[in-house]
Image (cartoon, rainbow over all chains, first blue to last red; front, side, top):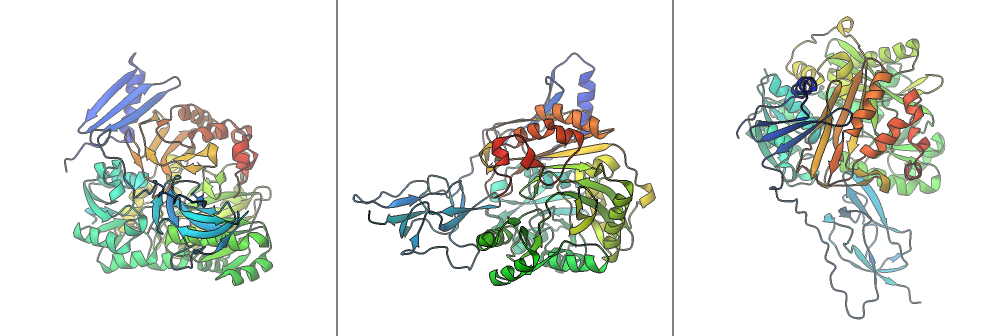
Length: 158
Length: 453
């Protein structure tokens, strides 16, 4: 790995102090693969760091997101449970614990059916509808986005 | 002598550790998950070692993988940062068993302070007041304990710290559900689902003492106020803790040093207290046996590099500081900038950062691993950077803060910078009237409504 000269915060402070005594508004410092832009703002100075390798080149993170909803059967009248935010879908409150719900269980609007872990925070997922759990669509511990259908619920006959 | 330092962490703290280690002439090796291969810390570290897939359990929380990577890289020492395995006694033992120095306290201290129930007991023995409460092994035991402690109460992770797994419960009806969530968060964050409960104290200030020890001597590097929190996650930290009379403040730092001395503590640690905002009575909460997120405010008022102190003590050197030689000057404030949509109930906002402009200049420090094109993965916590300002007085620091905040422009993800602009403009903040319920009084509807959950 090529070694870059690290830019310290003391360096940046020094650059600002020097620039402040000049009429210049911006300086771009290029060190190895890094570009540091120090610029005058309305009330002070700003710093922006850019890395050659990363900006625009690095592939976006590709999680095993399940976002395409499996085609429902023609006569499908089931309701979908989707996560309130993207994250990892867990069927049980902790590893080894029994799942919140199984296929065949009756759920109500406030029944907790899953938890979603995003950035270390747990958010519980409520069924949001009444009926019987007909299918658990997504495997436990899968990264999902908000379009993903976690479970299908057969609503109570009207 | 530590020549090759392995960093078992990620994000801004990994970068922070690398900076000091490189300045001290060490070769730095960063263990990275697949999600962090292109991160700024990975680029700045002298060497990288791939730990495994993105989820923490298979990378940053895997004792086996961290140690295998450090051993393969012929590291002399491992710095665990904060969070992840930093206070895991099993990890510290495994590091020692691999013949590597653990940059942190002895296993005995981790055992004593890592188990928050044991910590309460030891603090009690040393004469520190503790908040009433006790263990909750399962839901039935929790109900029994709750009946004694009373509502509202707080559920906390036994292996915890940093507010993770912490839940406020207002009535018996909520208890079971909150226990599930607290145990799940505790498991996810610390690999240990055990929880305990404690009486909830409404109007308190969170005040902590930075301590340093070498196994023989213990000193303190002053206090910090971390009262402004949301769901027990600190948002703003200041040093020193302001507006507390000298006598209770001295009692607080004395108590912290007494505990540190009692533990024959080695390295940097923080003793946390809940302080009554009116009477200044204080209760021991916990001791964090690691470097903390908010350590820069202490560095700003003491001029001491805490990471350097950790590395020196880990290297077996006696403290080069005495209490008399620690000078305090000025006031410092840190804001945590998180990748969260604070206007939508603080939803996590992972993604690619298109542009990251941070303020710069005298009295301003930015600790961040996010530059242009940086990735904020959904797998880890949401901290993307810290803005630290210092001034001769609190008033000067507050004034500088408002201007510096205007210099933060992050595009591509949502951040909490906007929330901080409201806090910093709040007259209570400017006057220094803070307590742990500060956010509830902030005059923004969406924040008020979500102060508890």
